[in-house]
Image 1 (cartoon, one colour):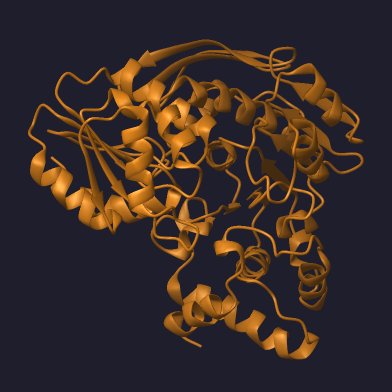
Image 2: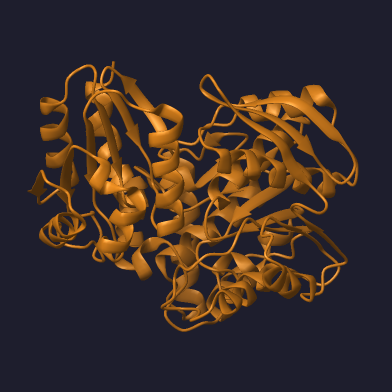
Length: 429
């Protein structure tokens, strides 16, 4: 099986848009495949990360901090922006096409032996575990696909379980309350593990404290970003952990929420080692963090940004950074395609404060049709709205229209960000 055959095999097994669990909540299939492979998910200690928003950024920060200590770190993330290889990496280097195909081929062979049909996400998850075992990583950092308890990644017995925050998302699988969602995410906390909780609401924190961890650290009480200031190209932070205060830490990511994620990540790594980290390791680790598609600035004339905000809380964070931190002076152009209620998302993006809205259909079977996104924008009070069938067409038209003083933001989902990114990069300067 070559790389393209591996991609074809994956697409034939697509379930829930390649990002999460199968329709029936069960770990049976992934457990059978892992057992058949000798349980590679147990070949190295694990840090497991979930949360409604910020889990991808937090997982990457954890990985970079661990790498800075000299460990070999395998990282599993989802979804990808442009290529599936982005989901599986070692010390920041993506799995090569040939190695990816080799791992997927092994899963395909097992499918015939065990007599079970895995989903896209289960295949990639199993392939990641197998590759991490093959290359003998020292530690694996695993980002949950959806929720936690029944996510395919939850076959790991993590040493540290991390929850960034709780919001309303994936209500087709959990809800209708935040407490219900919290209970699903608490499912990654294993008896005897440590839990690092970024959520601060007491009723939700109580759910995590009852989940059976040996130790639980909570943001605000045990750790925090005590100073979280805007800096050129990112944030300047003072971070307090359960053991130490780290002053003047530079993080090259935009938004105050990333400072909060940094406090979570640093506490998780300290908890993993059961010891503070040297300041030079902390500074080196955070300085290396890169998050493509998460409020990523691609160009400056015009200011060109892509962001994968996919729910109202993420959209609100995106809008705050765009309007409050960047404060664009020229015209503001919004390229938006979403998988959710467009009225709710556009309100969170503050779409009525943009001069032009380029409504498009996100490249997903769940993508809201551009005409419906446009209608929601007009209902919100947006005066100038254009409609496009594809993200790519919307990006081209927006960049042809924009001049050097304008600001262009492409957002609404990670699928939108992934489609917009290569197009906008061609115009970046």
